[in-house]
Image 1 (cartoon, rainbow, N blue to C red):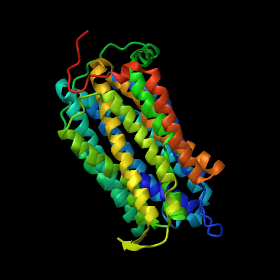
Image 2: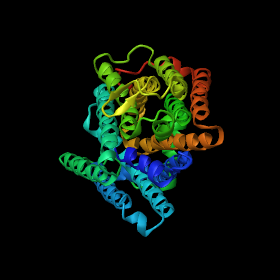
Image 3: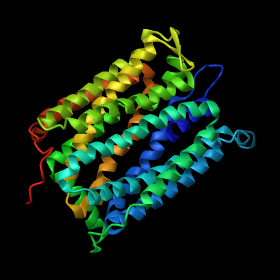
Length: 412
């Protein structure tokens, strides 16, 4: 919800040129870059820190940090502030806030991953990963939709609502009992970091799954350019933007609901690569959605509905469904193959590979959109995703024969 509001505010309020009827897509890429730098940098040692600390307390502290950050964003969207300082300064302050958010996420991601591993029996990891992903995706659906509607009421109203929701999350986390610390020996941080990286790079299944998803998301970052499609190409405004932003999450929730009753047990590695290839295809088709027209053919919830919007929404929804499959398989691989005492460090490496790829993908999309145009940039990203799948198929034979879902980890 916050990402939806801030992205639209940056593109439409801070960089939009009414004469040229266009904003700066690179500003959207900069949002991604400002989040990915700390997400990668702090992840180098956050895993070591998480493994030595109590997980529930860390999660609570991260949420408090997010609440303070939302208050900061609320202040920056204050209309009167634009008469006191320049839009350029507000933009750079927003970049600073996003940078701080990336640092918080570097600690939140491994903390929640490690906490989940402590709360859930090992034999329930595959199903637990599905339900955990489903709950996250529900937020990914409701958040952008609410964000789009809240923009109509005012940017500050939406961000205040974000603060309230985060307070509810903090109360929920605090009701979880404190968990024991499994790793109590304090080894040098350089050695600790090395062990986490060595584990990932010497485990082909883990490395292949992380690399495949990272490069697929890196090149398939069309979501970062949604403000451009909503305002300049499809002309559907704030509400249409909210629906498009929510479409991948809707698709993910639908697929995760299906997977909760029909687990992936046969040839999960092949299904992983097929779904990421499908993600690439939907990205390509989405790129061309503007050619199907932006003219109004009906009114739906206050915005013009066109064939271009219908196709864009459908492709984003299908992309979310394909992505949900890869999330479940990758999450299960990490839970099953990661020793309890290394969960924080491995999750930190996962943050470097996966979580940061979204922001790197946003940066890649912003740069290529300015360089070659928005539509060619999105189509190029989808094509590169297909190339990544092809390379992985031949480079990682163990992924093709993967048979771990629904099975307990074998003791070694």
